[in-house]
Amino acid sequence: GVLKASQTAKSPFNGCAANFCLLFFRSMLPDVLDDFKVQNPESTGHEALFYSFYVFFTKFASGVSLGVSTLSLDFAGYISRGCSQPKEVDLTLKLLVSAAPIAFMLIGLAILYSYPIDEKRRQYNNKMLQEMRDSEADSESETTEISNMI
Image (cartoon, rainbow, N blue to C red; front, side):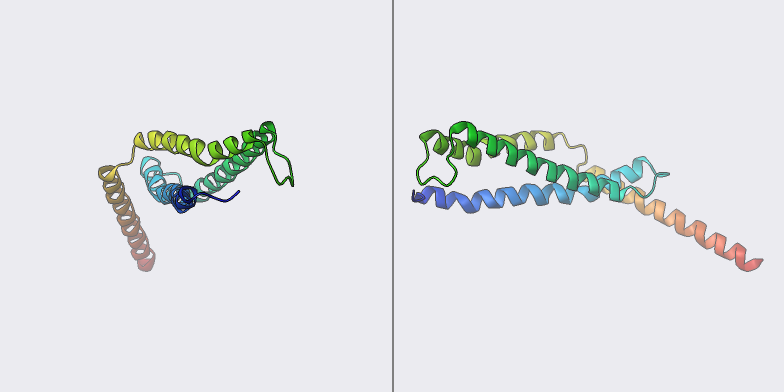
C-alpha cells in the first residue's frame, strides 16, 4: 500500500535516532579508554581490543535483529514475493519499526544513565593522563641526558 503522511514524516526521525545511537556510543569509546588507562597505567596497547569489541558487538546486534525480524515476519505469515500480505504482517512490521526500537532505546538510555564517566571524572582522567605523559617525557629526557654524558 501507499505510505501514510505520518509514516513518511517518522522515517527521517527514525533514521536520525538510529544514527545517533551508533555515533553516540562510538564517541564514548575514547572516554572509556582514557578511564581504563588511568585505572591501569601499567597496561598498554588495549585500544584495538576495545574497538574490536565495539565493532563485533555492533555487528552481532545487527545480525540478531535481522534474524529476529525475519523470524517475526515468518511467524506472522509473510509471503515472499506476494503482492498482498496478511494483516498480521502489517502489525508485525509496525511493531518492528516503532515499538521495538523505542523499547531498546529506553533500555539503552537506562544503561547510559548508570554510565560512571561524567564530566568531572573525564576532566580528572585528562589531568591524570597529562601527568602520566609529562612524567614519561621527564624520564625520557633524563635517560637521554645520562646517555649523552656517557
